[in-house]
Image 1 (cartoon, rainbow, N blue to C red):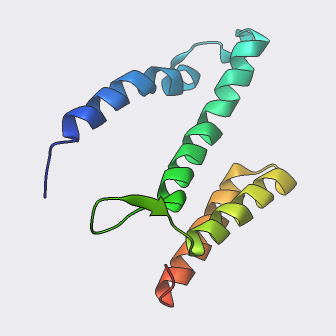
Image 2: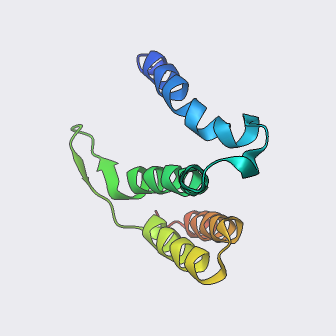
Image 3: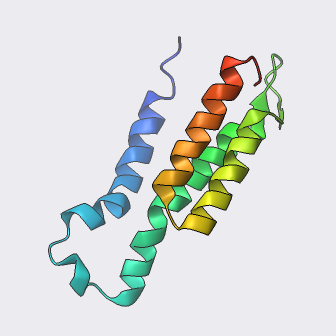
Length: 110
């Protein structure tokens, strides 16, 4: 196991954490300007979308080359997006995506 990317992960955390923590640490959050509230509302879904894209679209082969991966993860992401849009519940979409991915992997799909 290589730890070469640990410093990069720490730098990425240090750069992105302030924008994610504003909602938790700002007193009187409701008094922020409307544009700031709109931005904060979209930070979580944007982070999740980036993670979903990286984990479902990119597959690295044995030769180190990246390619597009098609599998149960795509179904989980599409269902999650549909549920979030339809029910306006990020939690419901995430739970459904995890359940679909876990069930697919349990039966041998990848």
